[in-house]
Amino acid sequence: MTSWRRRLTFTAVSVLAVLGAAAGQAVAEPPATNDVQPQVIGGTPAAQGEFPWIVRLSMGCGGSMITQQIVLTAAHCVPATGPNTSITATLGVVDLQDPNRIVVNSDYVIRAPGAGGPPGDDWALIRLARSVDVPTVPLTTTPEFDSGTFTVAGWGAASEGGAQERFLRKAQVPFIDDQQCMSAGSDYSDLVPAEEICAGNWDAGGVDTCQGDSGGPLLNKDAAGNWVLIGTTSWGIGCARPQNPGVYMQASYFSNAILAAAASLGPRCEPATNTTGQAIPDEGEITSAVTVACDGNASSQTKVEVNITHPYRGDLIIDLIAPDGTSYRLKGAKGDDGVDNVNEQYTVNASSETASGTWTLRVRDVFHGDTGTLKNWKLTV
Image 1 (cartoon, helix red, strand yellow):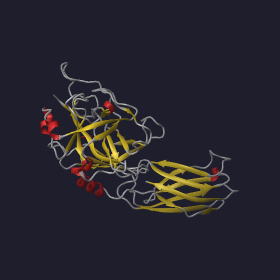
Image 2: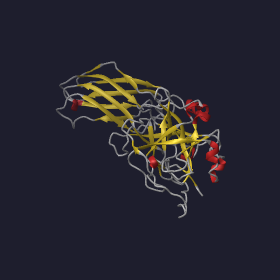
Image 3: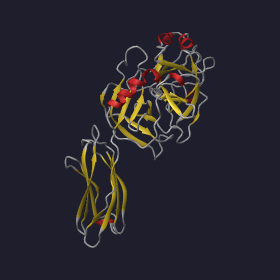
Image 4: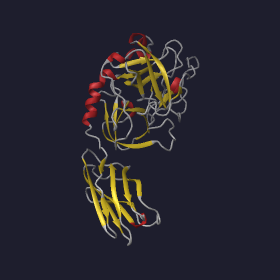
């Protein structure tokens, strides 16, 4: 029997199938005709905003925002520790095609030091190129939530070996103690009790995570009814089979290491705002500066929000000047003749720039006849 690292799809098994096998990862062999293969059922659609910190990763894994810049996922979803700009995170929506989705690239990965050896150390952190304004989920630091009925969620296949889902789904899976889980034999005999949690419907199956859902959340609630992240989807034999439960990284065991690794990634780049108003003279130029202090480079999706009052915005040229003096054109003159004011968010690819330093907004009025005022502007690198 082959275990599936549930990296790409969280079988919405009952809920989620985790999104399919990741590129370069071996896919489990189809079950033999005499293998038990229950239908993946039992999940329900998640409501918009129900899990606002859940993340869909481009390699086909899930993840959870534990800070506004750091995603916790599974180690087998990522190749190695080091700079990595190839991963795309989608969040803020239940529909992956929602035009309001937030999409951000990675800039660095930390893979658990013990990953790739014996089972257990299946966690990794992905730092995004910029912080995102979404709620985060707290990581448990004690084992008090490591039993009961858990909740799982993801965009994975809705059946074993199936295609990924477009809409986020959720399901409940009951805790299975370590001894019972190990009694399933096969790969379950190698379970590391202190480091892994098992969950699922032991007798009936039918609810589980699945291939591709790796790194997605295993959740419980505290006494106040708030979500607590107690694990991440790791592996299992098939999906939703009786006596073949899902296995999850046990966050209570690794929380100190995870939180220390997150702290080592350095401060996130908080948005920088200048609220000092400046008059824009007729046929004149002004500059306004902000200071950014954080590690790494700016994002390929650097955001600049500009608020200007002006009766004829076609007079204005607006540029963002990076700390090294490189200029990024935000708005040219003309093209919007006869329109007043500038209340816009511009996006530029400043990924070649060091994030830290002084960034400058330059506003030039290049036609005679009108004046205006720069009210404020905000930079998110």
